[in-house]
Image 1 (cartoon, one colour):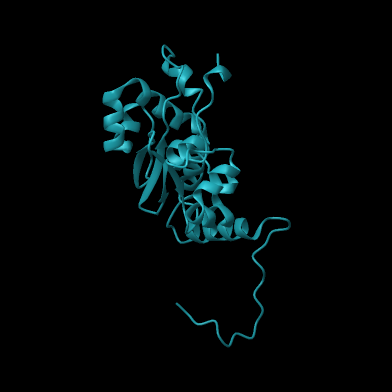
Image 2: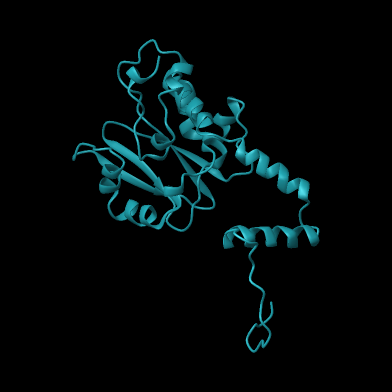
Length: 211
């Protein structure tokens, strides 16, 4: 560490044309880590490629399997990371992933009040609103109001539990299986599962919406 107080020389801004300041800082940090030998450019590229290959469809497969396989659901609720591996989904280097089951009495919703911790490994990149200050603050203070903003209106008697993601623990909501889906294949059920319903800010699609 060194003290910057007393410096009389200007610092060049960490920018690159129209590049956002945050992106420029990340790029500068990457350059420094590569220069110091902490990581290689190939390591960075492989990690980026892995991240962008993740998608909500991976989480939808997990949810659909839990809807049709009670034994798998039990394993999912006990250890979501191991359950993902069962389906050939690489949970990557993420910390603990916890599955939260919705019911007629309880609706779960996930937020990260500090930054934007998110189950990238099974849901892909987080939506912009998940990282926004309004969502991060209101989800805790007024979860029912936030759900209403998303078009989700739950019975007043239903309890809403808000879970705060951390660097150590991420959460995946297991929504209730929609009625009228008896006889649906696992693949067809997966089409009902949305990213938002796995965060808790949405509900599965109506069965009539898929064929």
